[in-house]
Length: 446
Ligand code: HSE
Image (cartoon, rainbow, N blue to C red; front, side, top):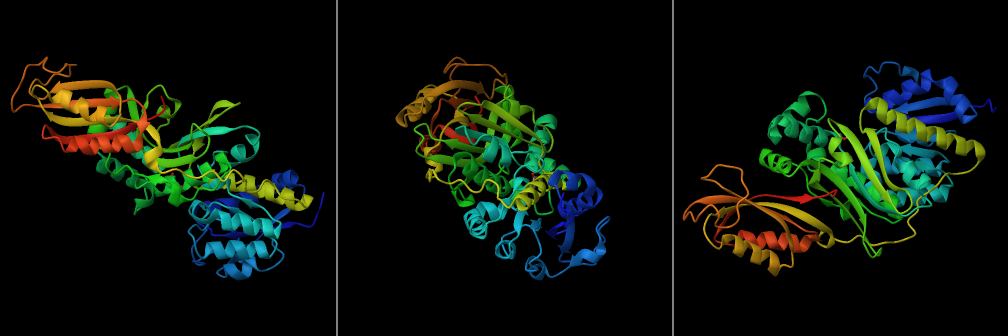
């Protein structure tokens, strides 16, 4: 075994970084045995050096991240700062100085992964980022390496714990969105500014990374259709329950049926309670992968938090160190298919549409005509007369004509292009007899 240690620089020492430092200093024996050489924490760059960090060697702290990555004797840089700049420059500088990089930075990888991959290849070093998607769950390596011989057709996942917690609370307690968000904030799941989570930016970055790896092409966050969960109401959740479904914020990456393009999207969707993702509760993450030969696979676990994310970082660190010792590099970017990313309008999906309509003869026929005109086939219709108050299935006119009365009409469609479905909804809004569109949600996982 080599006795000269491999040197590691840590950029960032917050919740994840301090766990990485702690594990590196407490598990040195095992890490040394697994790598085949001792591994040494050589410096830790932070913005606030005075902050108390339990178990982190104070003598390694510096505020000069640039000088640290330029030292020249660093074998691996671990980046857990986040954000685009100055991190992109720090990472490319680290590559130029011969270091491999382990990053947890989903925003940067989703915005400009191509630049980082190219810089790593040019320098002959590794870029690993298991921790960027779904925390502790091994997902990048299985997609990049274990499934490298298969053809992945779909990745469908819950990749944001905060929003899953909120939806789970809405589902289990009947709470509204704001109430559930307040609980998520009080328990420390949601940040003071929850925008990145609740508007779907965090999940969209992860979807871009997963789609690129799964389909061997380049997908950036700008290619991902994104809708958050702020518009999901308690009524949507109740409606999903009536259909035997629950609502999840899903990241969905698809290869098109003809194999010539891919799509990536993040939005709330109803999924049947029988789908494995429906049982993912609290702040857990889970990703469902469908591949030609492997069939259906599911990856499940904690998607955030200091220790779980550090677990993924350490796994990458061991791999990068082993490669350094062997004088080689691991699997790099694979974007050879150059498959274009199609817009959301071309995605084929199903809608659940809840309408408030006038309860009088001819309304159901009028609504059905709008669907037919847009070439959208209806799967099921449920009508409930408001003044009857019962939750019964009633064909048009069965409850009698109630001039001036109102009914709730729930239509679930068969699969159709999203553009046709959204055009149908727009046309429905224009009907005099449609008093309002109470909710629209896609249905997935069937
Ligand atoms: N904020 C994310 C979540 C974790 O709630 O899952 C970091 O990606």
